[in-house]
Length: 397
Image (cartoon, rainbow, N blue to C red; front, side, top):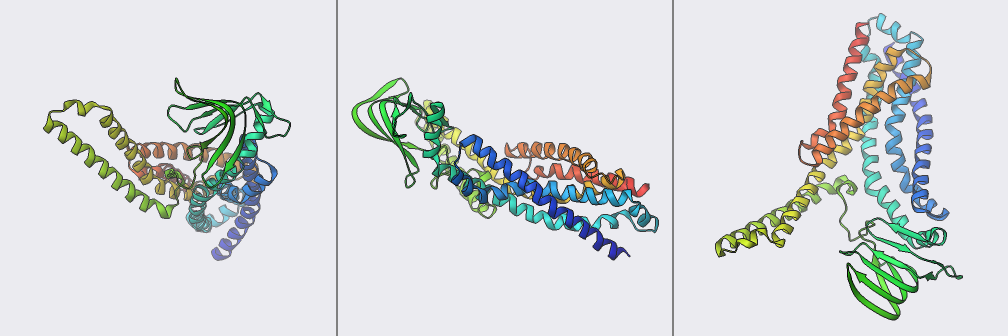
């Protein structure tokens, strides 16, 4: 009897899961595409190129919600039909009633971990590359409609207009944020061309003035080509990836490199301090070089904390599928309603409002070194306790 019930439950949950996954993924995919379309102003061909990279990003958000929706819908319905009550009345423990879906949630969780890893290490970088390859088109589109365009940490351009050929920039003012302090270029006219080989936007300018900070660096009559680096605004091939963008298989080697870098920085700072004390150059202990070394150490430690936290975060996020099932099933049984929307809403909102704040709290503390990396599992642990409480409540009733 129990075997037939398990097969029946698994089949019902899988049917709802597949249909809901398609719907939720489509909605999430649409949100990702619309967000990039609104933020970047991508053309139709760029959006077509973006879709494969957006798919794992959409799936990583859709999967936990979908499995929760499926189990809540099915268990809410069979509980409303008194099927669960009949099983428990015949002496079957509640944990055996929910065990088929717990197995399903556990099997889906590693897939969710893989999707989380794929989304950040391949999907997000792929989207950035699509945007990067379309940067020339995007810039001209914004300049022709709004007269200004900017990309964070890279550059901003303001023009008086676009020439009849659709390429000439009239009286452009370009601020390059890649330099410190930022460099401002004004010209009578110019044009832009993206160079994929050097990951730069090349501005061909006529009669330009270059100012950096408060100093006039150059007055150049005639034509001048100025490269605008995009490495700080985009993740170019030569740029160091953020810990959130590194694939799980590469985090270990990257952590080893970071540890070696920290060790060398500490040794250099210690050697310089020893030389200062030996030579009586106490001013070396508080000069710009020392402050820069201390800042590099602080940044290196911060990166190390994030690298240590990232694997834990991805596994915790992926296994939220299992813990969503662990909480959702007993809660749906207790509610005893066949209304899909009511059951899902009553299960989904509390689960989300409990899980993500606790997970984010653990992640934030782990990334600044206050708590150990395993703290990112705090949200899952809270769901484990809540699910156990609901299961005990059902068993007593």
